[in-house]
Length: 133
Image 1 (cartoon, helix red, strand yellow):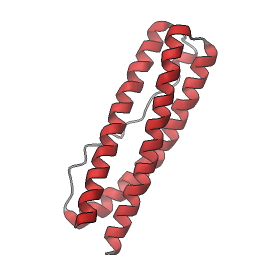
Image 2 (cartoon, helix red, strand yellow):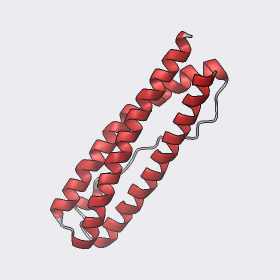
Image 3 (spheres, rainbow, N blue to C red):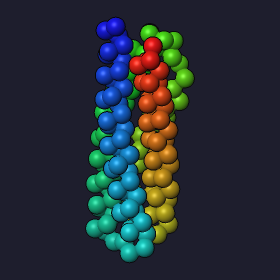
Image 4 (tube, rainbow, N blue to C red):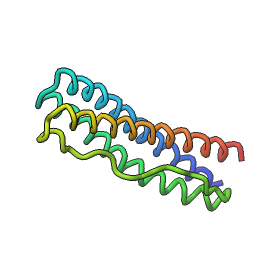
């Protein structure tokens, strides 16, 4: 029972940080679109503030996901978590501020949002399985 409680607690923590990461990426995406069409140094700077916030939340989520997987796999033989925990995006386009770099960074933001969305769904599904067990 204690392991189940710890696993669910770790899942909740991971979900909080993954959702905050997703929200920060969503904000960065909006600023990225502004940067592409009306841009400048200020919009690039704000976009990268949002990306740094996303990275901080992502790093917090990484630890919680690892704790969750440790507890969950020992309880239910769960091995099917396909969460890509690579880092997010660096700040190249503040210094190389042009439309091509902005579009590239925007594509990386979109890719990161898809990964976070998949991760959130997977953690929610595994947490639900644990709660029913």
